[in-house]
Structures are given as C-alpha cells and as structure tokens.
Length: 78
Image (cartoon, rainbow, N blue to C red; front, side):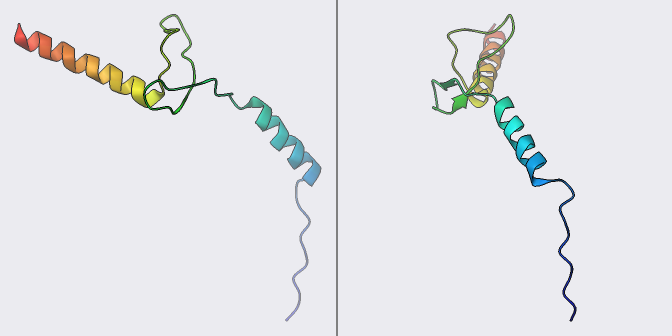
C-alpha cells in the first residue's frame, strides 16, 4: 500500500491560535451566583432589571410561572 501524503492545514496554526484567543476575550464574565440554587447567573439589563434580584434564568422563569399561577387562582376565587 502507498502512504497517503500528509495534507497541509488550510489555515495556518498561528491564525487559528489568534482566533481562539480573540474568542476568549469576548466571553461574558459571570459576576454572581443565583440566590436560590447557586448556579451562575448574569445580571439583567434594561429598565425592568431588579438590582437586588440575583436569579439564574431557570429560577427567574419559575418565579414568573408562580406569579402567573397565583394570579389565576386569585381571579378564580373572585
């Protein structure tokens, strides 16, 4: 059998390394932990952002769902 020729990389390793380093700089830094479960969370942005609310996205969705359920129960009682 013949040996297969070693293919040269299409992109030089130096350019690949520079690209990897540029991506690492752009990654978001986790600033806090969730107050409920301890998972990493990012602060909310915008006018509705609560400064004292440190919740991950899962706990935040559960909180919104709980509010929705309690509103439905109150309207059913009336």
